[in-house]
Length: 313
Ligand SMILES: [Zn+2]
Image 1 (cartoon, rainbow, N blue to C red):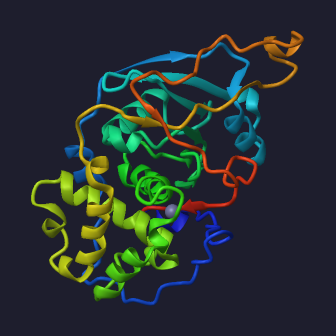
Image 2 (image 1 turned 180 degrees about the vertical axis):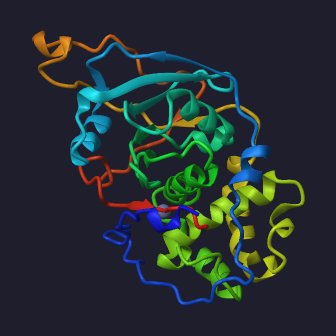
Image 3 (image 1 turned 60 degrees about the vertical axis):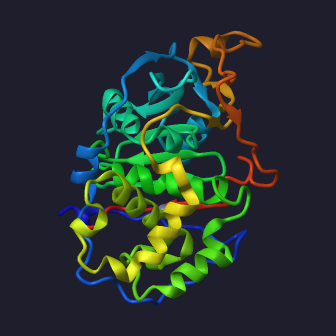
């Protein structure tokens, strides 16, 4: 319904991997209908509490992406969300004109399996002004969303799928570029949709959504796609590779180290003090293992892997 107004952010995949060729397998028929409503209904939210940061302090990535999108870092709300299934908080950033509220961000993120959330460092919401889209810095699990994303768990799962692709299976290699993934793709007759045709990284991220749907919604993907067999090897391989990361329940076990904290700028209280030190402890608890940040893919090369996806009609 909104597709005509949706903007796509160009995916820049392959600067490192070299696997950005468009895929020519035919689209599955009939096309897969929107998966959001059933996913939303069957993913139960996790209880959470929220605490807002004192104005002025901001994760460096939130400041940097705000500046990159010509948004003012002073307009970003920063808050911690503490879920009952993890000792560690998640930090979120929201531009004050974003269509999604802080509570909606906490709610929908909490619906995703905690072991998927494990691979997210920052969730960042900006105004979409009539469009809905997202991209990810998949090396560090920073997801940037635009628009009314609160009812679209597929968008969140897709973006996290990019980070899982790099960090959760082959650890530092793109699983979507592995012989195992390519073999699964080659065994199938079709591909899930036209966005998945962009390249294998987008295909894997789309299949992450389908793999999650198939595990979470009673009856699985066959309830909405009679020709599921045409993509079976892809989503079944995603399920096998991702294991319990896409199964709800349990507790957190991995996290990226949190982002650096900086002052928004000279107009904030922290900007007036020399050598101001952020009054927050964002080190990880003993409950989680730190996901190693891969050298050469740190935030200094932020566009090494960027993926975007907008839901289809
Ligand atoms: Zn993507």
